[in-house]
Image (cartoon, rainbow over all chains, first blue to last red):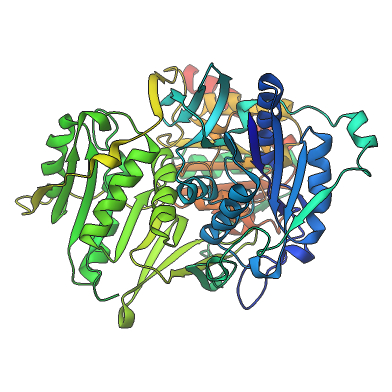
Length: 260
Length: 337
């Protein structure tokens, strides 16, 4: 199977920088780490490629400082590394992001499977996977926690509120991966030593044949108009002191209020 | 944009009934439709037995239910459902389209957005109407900051997914009049390479934290899985359930079923005790329905301490076992009285 795995660099907690005018993330100024859910997506892709004698192409739409994240992906088992980087991509919402990834999928494909993490921990929308599938006209299955390759199809286990579903899916398709899907392997020493030799292919909007009007801030139908801090009521009770005392005090307040 | 009229919501059929979140969309959808002086419609795809639900939805304030009833809609298949919803949107042209942020809604709404090239805002917790241009202002937590963002969409319909548990359940309106219209999608819409071959319910022993009256929740401030485990003892003493923040779920201290917040659930207990939780917005958006909020944290400046009704300053790792000990004593005293 030829598999594309989408990887999103997210700002390291505490290093988030936001553009005060557009309210979008300034990713080029933030310290980036791999979105934790994408680590499971990558492992799922690598495991499946191993079982099916396939290849994993790791693709990331990000500023140039995200190159290291792709090199990490190589150490975790990705075969080819592609960074989609262009000023025109900046400020993209999920629709513009998924369009860009779809253009890359067409350029680099065909793929039997496209794997994304369930959700990213910065935007927390969980929208890019299904949107990407729609751009490509492929079926999608979200929140997948187990993948079994069969002869000409995949058996997927999907989490739902009520439990889970077993789904038989014929490739090509797009799936998004749950964190329970696997236990990601540690980086391979052999691959770590080869990191200097591997190429991170950098592609621009022109390279992937993307149309300007669908890209970045201009191609994003949603816009943040302002932000505000949520207000809290003022009448709180504050308890401080030694642990014994505060515990006692808390319980007596809860008792007075009829809560315990 | 004038060609787009009315507020539409997605009606989710669970296989037995209409999902709870649909009633929450009905109440907020009705409010928005009234404010815009327009109609409220429900898009309902489902198997033939979902038919009974259509008239039920009218009695909760829907002016029109656009139903597609077909055996092939018995299971949720992302591609089929999305094509049907997209065809309905193209025909009925609502100005606003809301989906529940359930597992189904979160899979469906972005597919529809991708098919129709529309903006979509995820996990909204509030809406406002800007009357002069009939714009829907969508409110959700912003990226990693302690702020909420107001978001608008340039495309129509203005689409959003809505956090379950945020809006009230719609009230039944005796004698409310509405119509049911059957929509027949194209045959093309039913093509899929997906097949649902089995559905397995969760084991019954799992606690549903969205219904718990008392929640004891823990965050990274508890320091270790061992300390976190003690929450279960406290929950048992208080007849409550255990909640968690995302980081502790990711560390494997507890399963994601217990996660409260943007990617987790919203809770509305009478009493919530947060141990070692700093209170990022991504967690606290799930706490809007809490009646009495108690925060226990070593850092008095933590956001959850500011939001709390009762802010207890101290090390959660020390206070948690003390509370358990004292409650046990209290309980045995009560039993002896």
